Amino acid sequence: MSDLSRRNLLSLGVALGLVGVTGVAPALAAPAGADPWWAWDDELDQVMATLLDTGQVPAVNTALRPWVNNNHALPTGLPTALATHLQHANALPAWADRAKLRLAADFNRRKDTYLFMLYGLGSGIMSTVIPREAKSVYWSAGGADMQDRAAKTFTFGYDLSELNAFEPGGQFVVTANKTRLVHAAVRHLLPQSPHWSAVADEQNGIPISNGDILVTFHSLGTFVHRKLVEWRVPMTAAEEDAFLHMWKVAIHLLGVRDEFIPQTWAAADAQAARVLTPILAPSFEGRELAEDLLGLTAQIDLGVTRGFLNEFVRYVLSDAIGDWLGLRRDLAAAALVRTGWPAYIAFREGLLPVMPVGFYMFDQFIRALAMLFLNNASSPTTTVITIPTGNRPGA
Image 1 (cartoon, rainbow, N blue to C red):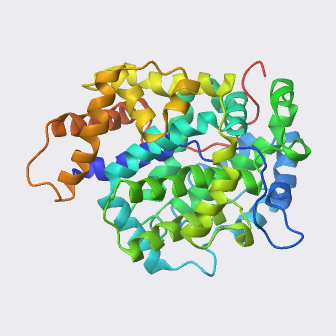
Image 2 (tube, helix red, strand yellow):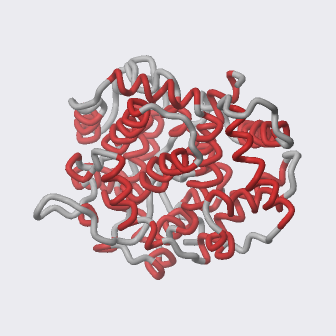
């Protein structure tokens, strides 16, 4: 694939994955006395609440703007408590394995087409049928402008998928820490919204617990890994382990306590079966967000119909989810997707000697989606993750 597609297809999918807030609270396996659903980011949450209540966040955003690369020094002029937090948090955990992270980066590059489609038309749309996530996203500041939100979230996915994501010259460690600051701000702001409070069921009235972030991980990493296996995409055991290791480091950097993070794909699958699959459900907020996300595709010629797009979502997720979201059926497109996509994968992986009918259409569809996002969202070099100071206008 071209450099453009290698660097950006995966990123768009993660952007649409809306990393950050999710689910309801089924039981999560955890050490005795520990409960991820009652674990937030206490010290940072207190710091951010003070900064918001005293009007310091705009100045903090200005100070953080030039802080981009992992090897950049912390900005000067930050409030002492925030600087102290970042000095401790802005580093890989001691257990991070750089060799595995490099292998994961190479795996992302080589499998980017499948990863993009799964993150974008799988995880991204799945997020709209995770009730807590949909409601929290919709009523937060970002929910009012999904294109802008996708542009900002795109930075997270872009930096995670880069070959040097965790290296000194990469950007993901800083990006993850900025995202963690955003989460802390949302935890303080959303409970002030009467609209969100009227529909929320979070423990103690606080969103984005460790459990919520784990559910988001399962809608992204665990779901994608399971589909790659189901689609028979060739992967070595080392690549699968490296892909999980990358996600483990990522959610650690978002503030999830290590004891809550599954250590194997078997453990992740079992956890997801308890906490993700049972809670998928439609909501007003989710339907609105799904239409916003899918509606972005109407802005350019993708080379396919809206029916094709709807049927691809149904194929990746399920007809039940498609029905929840009101995705109109197109039976001809459904037949094309269900026969053409497996053949597309087989040819790309050298398992089919002759290019199948429809290969070019699938290839162009993926490229068009990438260009849609890139043309309507700022580039990673100009998109800035900023700490919000309010909720959805009018909320």
